[in-house]
Length: 494
Image (cartoon, helix red, strand yellow):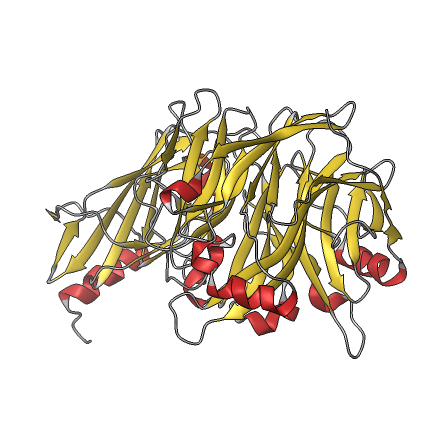
C-alpha cells in the first residue's frame, strides 16, 4: 500500500471532516481574498458573501463564527450554504479566520470581521451592457434578489426588432422604490417611454413641437404625479489616443416636466446657452436639483466639433429651483455649488430619503463620469450647507451612478475599481455621523464571476419588490402599441 505524504494526510483529513487546526503559527497580515470582504459592514439580509482565498498554500481551512454558529469550509473557494449563512447573519458580527497549510504546518492569518447592520431593500435592477460601444444592441435590464442569487431579465434590446432596425432601452426608474410605478425609454424601432402606472402599461412620446427631444434622464416626483426629465441631443466621440476611450457630449440639453394625469409636457429650464441635465427631487418634492454648464458656441456640426475640442473646459455646476407641486409653479434658479471655481464638474445629484444629504459625482470635466478614468463622490449636508469629498468611497478609478436605499442606510454605486475597465456594483452603509463603511461587491454565487463576466453593470436602482410584468408582456406591448403623443403646456413661474 502506497504511503501517503504528510501534506496528503492533511488533505485527506480535511476532506473527511474539516476542522480548525489545533496547532499553528500566526501571520501578522489579513489574507488576500477576492472579492475583498475583509472588515466590512453588511446588511442582515444579504446573500452569502462567497470569496476566493488568494494566498499560496497547499490547503486552506476557513472558520466563520458568530454568537452561536460556527461553519468550517475547506479549500481556496469559500462558498457558504445559504441556510448556514442566514444563521451567521442573525448576530451582531461574523468573525472569519483563515488557515493555510504550507511546508508541513498550518498558519493562521490575521482574522477579520463582517459587522451586521440594517436591512437593505431586497432587490436591485441594473443595465447589463457590453464594454464595446458599438455592441449596444446587446443591452438589457436585469433585476436581482439581494437576499439570494436569483436574477432575471426585465427587458432586453433584442426582444423587439424587425429585420433592419432594433431598439435601445435606457434609464429605468421607479417611483419611491416601488415597481408598480416605473418607466424606461425605448429608442429607435417602436420607440417611446414605457410607463407602468399602478401596474398598467402605457407608452408615451414626450417630444413636442416646443421641446427638442423626448424625455431622457428621469426623476419621479415623490408625492405628486409628475416626472422631471432632461431633454438631450447626445453624441459620442471615440478617442484614437487617450486614456479616456469615449467622450459622451450633449450639444443641447434642457429640462422638462411631465404631468402624468394630463399627459402634458412643460419646460422647466431651456436656456439655449445652458446644458441642463440630471434632475433630482428633494425628499419633500419642493425643490429640484440639477446640473448645468453654460456654453455659447456655434450650431450644428460646427457646434459639435467645437464642443469636443473644448470638452475639458466643460465644468458643470449644481443648481436648484423651488417648486410648488400643488400649483406646479417654479421659483428662480439658485446655484448650490460652483464646481467650475475649482476646475471640476459635478453630476448625478441624488438626495437621501430623509432629505438631509445630497450625494453626487465630481470629476475633471463633462457630464458622463462613467467614461472618465477618475471620478469621485462629493456629499452635501443639506441642513448645514457644508460638503466633503467622500474619501472612504472613492478609488483610483471611475465611480459613477449611485442611488440610496429606501431606508437611507445604504447606497449602491457603479465603479471600475476592480480592473479599470468593467463597471461593477458595490454597496456601502452610512452611519449616524454621515460616514460610509468600506464598500463591498455585489455577492455572486461564483466568487470569480466579476473576473470572468465581460459585460458592465450600469444604472443600479434599489427596489422594494421585483418587477411583476414579464419580459414577454413588455415586448408584446411595445411591439403592438403606438406611443401617445404628449401635449405641450406653458411653463408656470412664481
